[in-house]
Image 1 (spheres, rainbow, N blue to C red):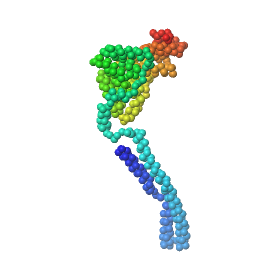
Image 2 (cartoon, helix red, strand yellow; image 1 turned 90 degrees about the vertical axis):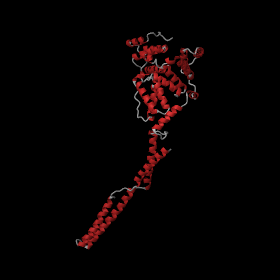
Image 3 (tube, one colour; image 1 turned 135 degrees about the vertical axis):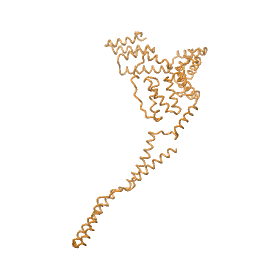
Image 4 (tube, rainbow, N blue to C red; image 1 turned 30 degrees about the vertical axis):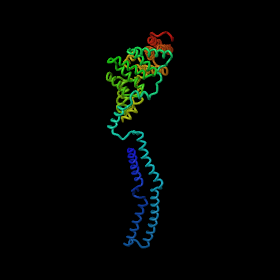
Length: 411
């Protein structure tokens, strides 16, 4: 409140100074008629001097005085008219003062609303950092966050057969709790069903079974499941998993993204911005964390007090994944890997369907779908490409090479 009182006071003082400038009479040399008056008065004195020296007669002096007096009256009337016109009406002056006050006070408030940070307390940077650290240490734990988070919808289409398989998997892992493969499958499929609490419990069991052999990808997967279970909130438990991930793999993209998110949630947009800016530079446009970073980083930069412009998105977002691209995701969590590959494939597929493209890109899409095991979709894309390039033997050869191993038609 003190800040606003000081700001409004300064704005009023500034407006008052401008109003005084408007009210203060202007120092001018006077209207042109005033010069004429001075000249005519000097002429009267000159007539008296000439009469005293005997240069002119009394009658002639009287005639000259009468003519000069007539001119003095006319000049005086003109001077009064010019003075009244220069002062202007009183209402115009008052309206001008009111406009100055409104412009200064209102304009100051508008500029602060647009460029400032309304809602921030009048605290030094040192105090804000200390408060952010307190907020980070005292934030709710995972259990409290999960209680406040509504259930998540399934990530895949759930059929009766799929539910039966999940039930059998749950029963099997309950009978064999020390089977790492069973816990890994359970974590993955519980996540597919939107049961992120059960998923991170299974993943925690998997990490415990692996012990020192647990990888950075294992911990990154656990951090992602904890965060999803908490509705996007990075709890202290998720923070611990992120620390383990980054200790084993400092370049893990998912962990770097979530670490920046935690900094943002605990009042450190400056650290979040630096983390995300570097991660954005290190990542391809089709990385799963690139879209959320690009959607938020400009606002984060503004909150951090940084003048930042989002760089243009590169052309890589329109390409499709090759077999090497898919293999490069081996260190990522299942969820992040699936999201990344699916996004790359969908981007390329949508672009080819709407804009078309060279046969090399159609072949690339077919190979990517084959690597992903989406045979039916690969066949559909192959058949479409064959129709598009029906009159181009070279293009048909590329499509045929990319389709090697696919059945002749849809099943």
